[in-house]
Image (cartoon, rainbow, N blue to C red; front, side):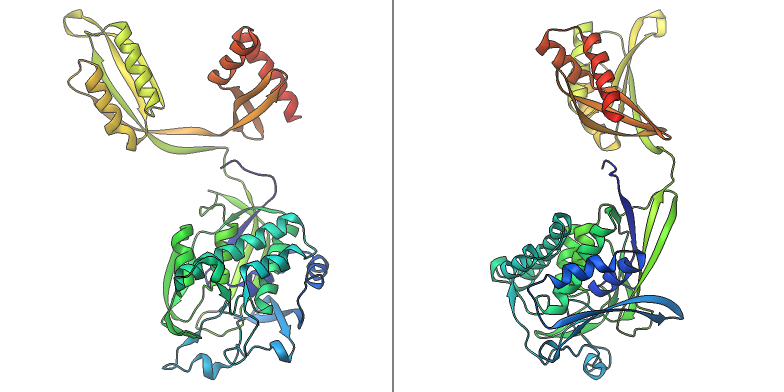
Amino acid sequence: MEKQTGNILYLECCSGISGDMTAAALLDLGADRKVLEQALESLPVEGFRIKISRVKKAGLDVCDFDVVLDEAHQNHDHDMEYLHGHHGHVHRHSHDGEGGHSHAHAHVHRGLHEILHIISHARMTDGAKETAEKIFRILADAEAKAHGVPVEEVHFHEVGAVDSIVDILSVAVCLDNLRVKECIVPVLYEGCGTIRCQHGILPVPVPAVANIVETYHLNLSLTESRGEFVTPTGAAIAAAVRTSEKLPASFAVRKTGMGAGKREYDRPGILRAMLIEDTSPSFESDCIWKLETNIDDCTGEALGYVMERLMEEGARDVNYMPVYMKKNRPAYQLNIICSEEDIPRLEQIVFEETTTIGIRRQRMERTVLERTVKTVHTSIGDAKVKMCRVGSNVRAYPEYESAAALGRACKRPYQEVYALIMRECDGSKQ
């Protein structure tokens, strides 16, 4: 994907991920507390206040984000006798494995429509609202699939409770405040065993988490630790904000934040978040395949037709080289550059369209510049331009077909159009 301007966030989920852990980690990274408080004060929701403090986890100083509810909305998540009531290791399913909701108190059951109404009336930026809505829609789809009902009929028994709404909106506000444009989540570490929820005993990962992991292709690593480390809210956050699962080859850490979980497991409940800067080279290495064959009895027209077919079917490049074969016969060597998955299809075309009876293959390593294709608005129309980064510099290469189409449309020479695109492209970068 094309890199965007803004911060790169790396979420290290060695102890899973939940809503309150994420909010705490982002606040520890430097998200503006006053901006968050103003957003939460604007919510059409009552019965809560937030508490941001420092706690010790495994001897480390970690940020803690807590939603303190009044008696009417109070939760009893830390009732460890209940949490461990099933053979000593059962944990109740909540939106948030670290800061969940009561099994003993009935909360307001809100549907997706009601929650989107709350978001739309909050004092938040459009970007924060978009993130919050995306998280809730992911949760709604996962719960609908788990219970076999239409998404419109999903009522968030726990996710719709006050502290869960506050957790999710806090994460959205903090991400927006930190200007996070890219988020890297390599893997989510999860526990094992079972947990208790209002529907009974469920396996870990719970169905909603499993559905999110499946739908959004999140990488999951199961540990031998008993408990729920990845909560539905945490999985939905990861799915909503992740742009990549791969860290840069090298990077600098600009700032680190750590968010605390509420429960005590055999591993410290800490979510570490880092703002990083990609310091890897502007080129990358990969592998490509070269196919080649010698042809001595095909016409020029036939060879031209073969080249067109090969390019249309995915070849990266096709060229011919004049060669002399045995008995000094003049011929052409056909060279094809392609990806491994395209080899069978391209070889079939060569056998169909030429007289060759054999094709040689060669796997080749290569170094390529980082590149993207962008549309540039010029005085004669839009043109596609390949942008290649070389260190801190960016080189522009107008795409041939795009420049040729503009030349035909305005009846101007190709070289003139090419130069105009280059000129106006350079101007747009300043």
